[in-house]
Image (cartoon, rainbow, N blue to C red; front, side, top):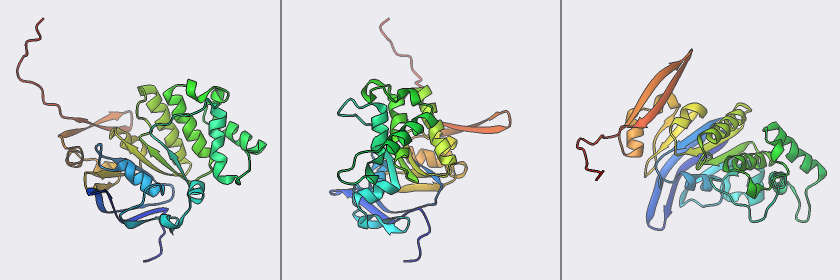
Length: 274
């Protein structure tokens, strides 16, 4: 094996749940500071891939390397110091304040019997302020909105001090405004040079955020590359199993692309009983 220069390297990776194969022999190299958007239908294994990268789920075969080190050889704490993970859904078992939830991000840096220091608390408070949600510091995490909780989870991950963040459907269940806020926050993190892998049910998000897109089908990747090149009608249709149309428009000097499924309109009128 040659020298690994990528931040994250996935090589000949395969995964199965029992006899059900999820994906086989997939390869992906992610450089430092890149943002990768994983697109694909439900059940194709996007979240499973994140769990494998995070070291939570072992591969059936193949290898995953973080900074040249095999994930298999890394402990939970070591991985937590290198990589944050913002889950799709999270519920706090106790009514912690948002500040306390964010401060939990320091856990990988504390000893077995250590408690967060004053510096840890100030770090958490500063991150909340920098993200524009300082007003949530003393509010109970269980009492704030879904969009606010997602921002607090991102703040907690930033408190870990990692260079890599995995986002699993970060805008799932959010309304239009909160989707925009979360995407804007991820974009800011990307511009700061963090390495980001994000799964999404919304292919249009890939044009807004990612430097590259990895499109997953039911056995592996359909295509990998810049959004402008791989987000074609052909690839999108193959990935999602229905006909997809891509449209292009202009906003001042910027080109805007978006896609929608091509709906088959009914040709008959149905009696509604009205």
